[in-house]
Length: 562
Image 1 (cartoon, rainbow, N blue to C red):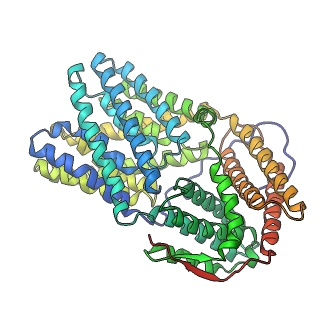
Image 2: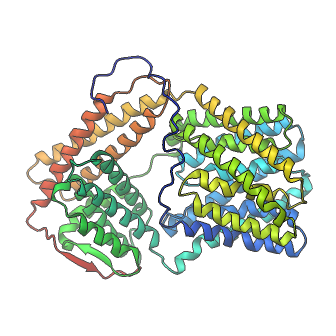
Image 3: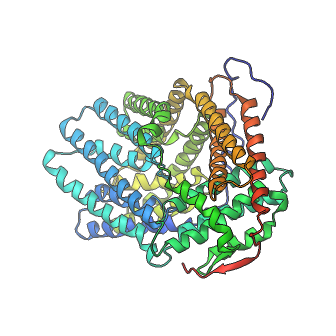
């Protein structure tokens, strides 16, 4: 990052890079959980419909079943709420789509309604931090429902099927709590410890230390957000407090990497992976003051929804405009399923234009490869309806198992699955399906990306300014407490955590703004100075903390079972 004083004017035009867009990553640690959950949620409703000879109704049950893909990283109390909201959101989108479909068959109107729904779903999912797969599944469901022949009398029954499958998906998503009720929070804490260990291994000056530090603070912040959703009292409070102490140690390691043993952090992380006792470091009295600061932070109310929606307005406008134009272009070409182009456009939009370009490339590559896979699978699936259902289930599993490696790899399975689902009501000519899907993919990606280029996000620079100001204020608060000989118990810890959160938000905001095009020059020098001074203050807070005479750096084991 340059430290030169910026000059006014627009940022230079960036090249469309393909470097690393298709590179495979390590799979998610819990890749098999959403994969198995999706199969468990989809299989029973589809097999029941097959037994009753009504596989044509599978579109409605799959609307509810696919809700099982959400919230796998959240603690179960928070997961229950998130899944419930996802199911309700899915039902709301389907209800609007079915009512619209029953009132008009005008394709232009249907595309317009689908685009508006996509924009609302994108904004609400991002503001609510629903997490992957975000708005894409909801948009796919509501857009497909718009183009399903419908009458008003049929809507209650179809919504009932979707609701019943949604309830089943909720139960599937919550079922792992019976086996490992503290799994998500233990994983989040382990990820924070490993990320802090990676930064400590650089000693704060080695190769890649800046990116490792940013990743470490992001993982710690995610761990705090996970612990935030756990109850502060009751049976689960002991587990929460034991994990909080470990996250505190990860924070200390990030602020003082040269004084940290990375292997100790990794050992604690490994201990959290299984079902054994939770490692504990330090005496309870020494940690007590720190956790007073944690409690103060956890008591803070999140920003209201309307404030979180405001910065997302450009992304919502991009989504609505891009989806509408993609659908209209598909109609102009005479494609029978314009919602495929609409959904392709909806899937592109990420935090900034650079990431949107990467997703567009991944989407096109994955979908075109998926069309070829469909050509190989279709002859087998057409032998019997039960094989059609089983092929869809296998592809469902493959999509969720592979998508964490790279989005395009998951799309290779998603595309033939979507094509096979269209045949639940009756077999169709594979050549026509393949041609329409390929054309709609190209149209949706091209038009959707052009809409993103046209709709600039000029608020990105303002958000960086606000993030710098917030980081400066958090640093000043921590510095004032450091200047006191004996700050009140918990105050310094709460200030340190607030500063850590502000610096994490500053780095994420600056990275997102740097990926936008045509915007004004960013205050790079202020960002660098805010980060440097903020991290110096964090290190000073750690030194003050380490100098306390009651601190014990020994390791014990907290007798808290999962």
